[in-house]
Image 1 (tube, rainbow over the protein chains, first blue to last red):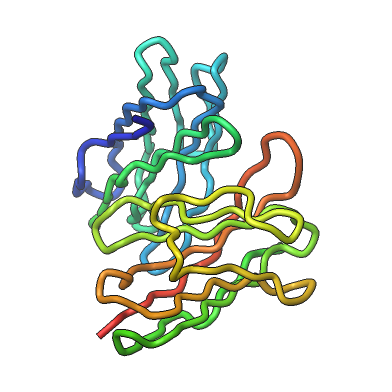
Image 2: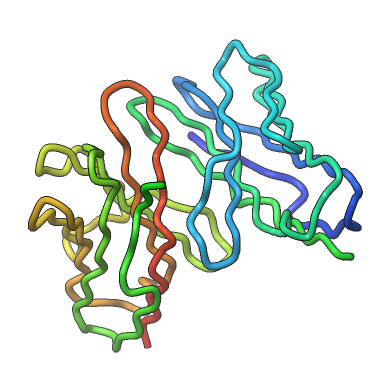
Length: 111
Length: 114
């Protein structure tokens, strides 16, 4: 079954601290993997995209990694800001532009 | 920057009523999608639409659902007879064209069925 699992479900971090979010995926045939940020009441917005051959990709303070062998990805947030409070959704693209969504990591950054 | 827009932002309806959710995709995009997200659950694919016809649909997209592109800009999702379990956020997305391209999501419509 094509699915994506994320952990932790939620976390609270202090402003300025770092955190890492985890994603495990099982899709076939795998195309690429994106991390999305979803602010409350908004639609998901893409942060990073990684294909099979890419291990690491950064977008400002966000750094995503991909291990295609173990089918795991992570999203690292550096020096968190209050505006980073959101749900971070791991989405695996597979087949003919199909998307498998994770449930999201709910991040709350506190001052 | 172009974006996908959706109206209304929140729709409240009685069970059994028909609702139409509206989306305006990014103007030069060719592929359109509807997704739903039940509170606390994952985003789920409903349907994809290309060249004025459904290209793929999920098992969720049963006979009570329909989509339409009535003009050159709007893309609608109709639920004929709403059920309590249809309460969810409904997201529209659009994609530019062939090959892999990012799907751009709208802000969503929160549907509440009473």
